[in-house]
Length: 174
Image (tube, rainbow, N blue to C red; front, side, top):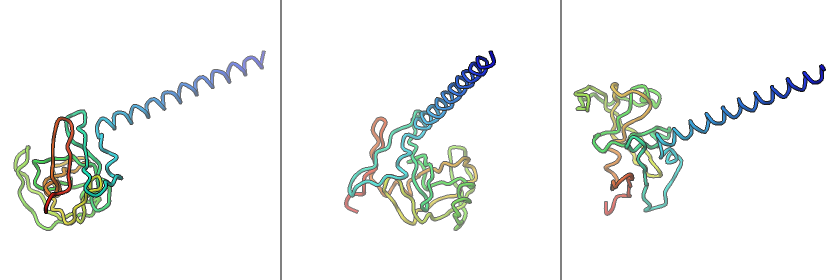
């Protein structure tokens, strides 16, 4: 009778372990699925395109262009914003990237007029495209870890937006 109880306990333990592992794997997969929906361009942080080749971005589920790139060789999630003059970096992220202020300025944002700091980013890159000495702002009103990738970077490339894609091309004839 004792062997039968031990076998039954072992069987129950194995079944419990199976369900815990199955639920853990499901949660891990679902998290990855949601992350891919939020940032379908995360792979661009480690991609380099061939000379003359474009960088193609997809909209996320919310209709925004979100991509992972780099500021001063550190990975940063960007929200591409053709309405932003500069690359706008949240204050906490700027501190982690050791960005230095080169002056202050007033900015007109969707939330009104705010004061921020100006900075120069040594290098900004996205999908193999990079630019040096990019003007930026340190914006205390921004929260989170995502920076707004504005026209101080995007304006160096030719941009085409159609349907759910944004395509960045190397500048022609400059």
